[in-house]
Amino acid sequence: MRSNETPTATVDLFADEDQQPARTEQIGEQSFVLRGFALPWVERLLPALEKILLAAPFRQMITPGGFTMSVGLSSCGTLGWTTDRSGYRYTRIDPVSSQPWPAMPEVFRALAQAAAQEAGFQHFEPDACLINRYLAGAKMSLHQDKDEKSYDPPIVSVSLGLPAMFLFGGFARSDKSQRVPLFHGDIVVWGGVDRLRYHGVLPLKEGHHSQLGAQRINFTFRTAG
Ligand code: MD3
Ligand code: FE
Figure 1 (cartoon, helix red, strand yellow):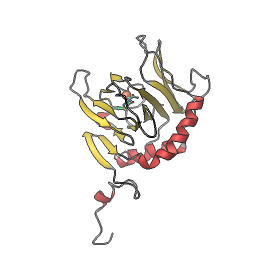
Figure 2 (cartoon, rainbow, N blue to C red):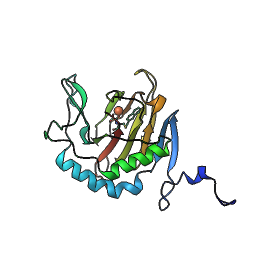
Figure 3 (cartoon, rainbow, N blue to C red):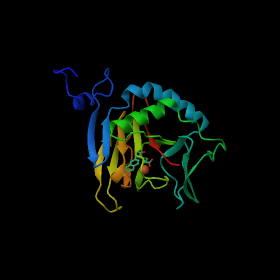
Figure 4 (cartoon, rainbow, N blue to C red):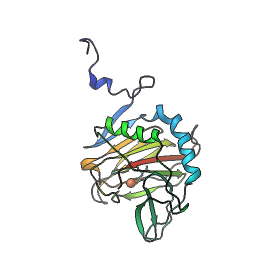
């Protein structure tokens, strides 16, 4: 490093030299919001997403308790997440198409890995990417993500389209949660001690996004198997 060069810690805040700096906010001991981190990737993510959705369209799944989820779900990767009356689980086959879930596009995997690395998690190897679609009014109640084999790898979530209010709770459902607004291009990375925190999303407000229209789409990358 030249003696008059900016220190590395500052340089690292710039995820991509031709975009505005991505700001990192720490929301838990091992949880980080990477503001705008996905923006330089969006034009490569959207065509890949469209292709996935042709093979595995959004569907509203039924919970074991018999409720229809307001969020539309799809998946890509070796494993996809499913719920029906018999429970929550990861499967290799999409129960709607009876085909394997669409492969995880390389650009998805590379983004998830870059974000995990930015948050301090090396060698993240996701085998599942859940794709959630929120239309106005859709929400996700407070829950924990417990269907993965190991809780050691982090989870990486990418927000696209309309903004949403994310609820970041504690380790008991009744713990007070903090509200974190998530915007188009934001990425959140959770791991380690924060991996089993309760979390959810408040009902989506109506609106229009120039690229995504009247919806919010969220990818969550996990190592499930
Ligand atoms: C916090 N999705 O798919 S992002 C989910 O925006 C889910 O669609 C929300 O919760 C969404 O399960 C929230 C993700 C998220 C995922 C895992 C977490 C937040 C987390 C694990 C621990 C703490
Ligand atoms: Fe979750």
